[in-house]
Image (cartoon, rainbow, N blue to C red; front, side):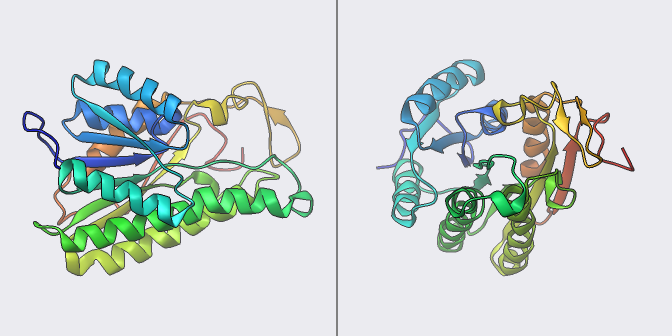
Length: 257
């Protein structure tokens, strides 16, 4: 059964939408008029975040639990979105984790697999289901925004699993963009530098630099990322932001420190 009338607007699904950058993106989309579904593995976190975002945005945000690294769970997630809303217009592949900061030879197989499953396999599985749906629905088409990272091209020390998966996301973005052209599917990527969240809370206190120093780095409000995603998704499907970098201007990324 589709969602009751009285709620209108395009439908967006944000993975990892209960916390951090994902929550900021979800709230920005809801405020911009999207009917937003947030998903993640912890239903209590999702329900609390959805209730708070609903209050802030003035329109319902729907929590649905799913494990995006599990194909069956992803299929069930998309089936529920279609059951509730009848279609999907936007997928934001945001969910991701990091491994402990270790030299690559000390990263365990389990740690590597966990990062790959969340950051890459999950994005691929969700992209697969979104593309199938975008092709089949009427009107045909939709948009995907992948959460990349400046780490894809400029990694931090001791972050091989994270950097490798974010580099792979760039390839997934371009492949999806290419294959989606004929079906009115647009796919872009936002590379984020130091948005303040639980994953980056140590950055402002001090983090290892490439030259061996430990130094504090500037961060940005994650709401700025949400605003950037709203711009990307507000374009007609005939246009696409393939890549966008949103970063703290004072962070040691551009140039040599």
